[in-house]
Image 1 (cartoon, rainbow, N blue to C red):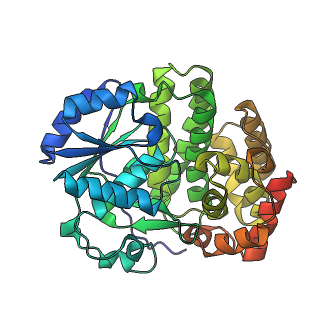
Image 2 (cartoon, rainbow, N blue to C red; image 1 turned 90 degrees about the vertical axis):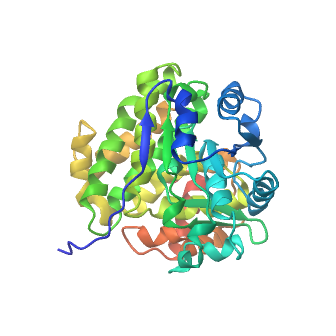
Length: 381
């Protein structure tokens, strides 16, 4: 067995109800005196944002789309420079966190954003002295971007989601306050929660030697199984909300090991059809599982035991996955979320080029991914 690997694990996390009150302390610890709070359009006028602005003295930039674009990053960078800001508060769901981290990255870079795509050693093009520190405040329990070293940004010119990466994009302090997530509606709670599950699932199934990631992934999946239905049923269940925030961060920590076909497809689907990332992952998961069955079934016995399923192995995990999605009112097909198969070949080709495809437990071609996409549009497991 290959027992060689490079491991990097998350940052400082202040977790628990009411911890948002410690935002000024987090800024002070990092020496940030004039922060820019970056969030998405939907949160701009939310009471939690107004409170964060009041206690931190930050300026607000809220021009971030649900699938953040290069233009969003450029506009945020212009606001950052115009205001003379010395740090960034990344506040919101995965889109806001990704955009904020990219804005902080670009503070004093001399190359364009796309030169820092996660290809080979392109991250070495970054001037680390030209980056600003970030305090991350997640308000959803899905992407885990608060403990991630990358941002997913859409290049509008090519309609391609690109992963921008640098090790120092990792926020230096995370405030993980479940009280900030209680207002999430049930459908968003479900979609983001299964996104967290998919991160752990794909990391667990990815090839390579990384037992630390696999252990975190298994516990992350168990937490989602136990606590997501509770958060879905009662948004004010603080214990469930807190456990789901932990599961989201765990998923992002685990997927340092790799992702796979679900994300390889979800990225181009989101770029082309502007779908919600977590919901797209939730719909795609069982279709990719079936395609990968031979490569992952040996791992499903342990997962079935960790999830305490009534049956063993792959079939039990697939059956539970379908039932779990249904209980959380996740659509069964991509067609139900506005995706058709008119561009199936194009989506397959884009998915093959996505960095996540390289982590799939079996090699996947554009034709393979096109077939999975078509099956997910039609609902054929």
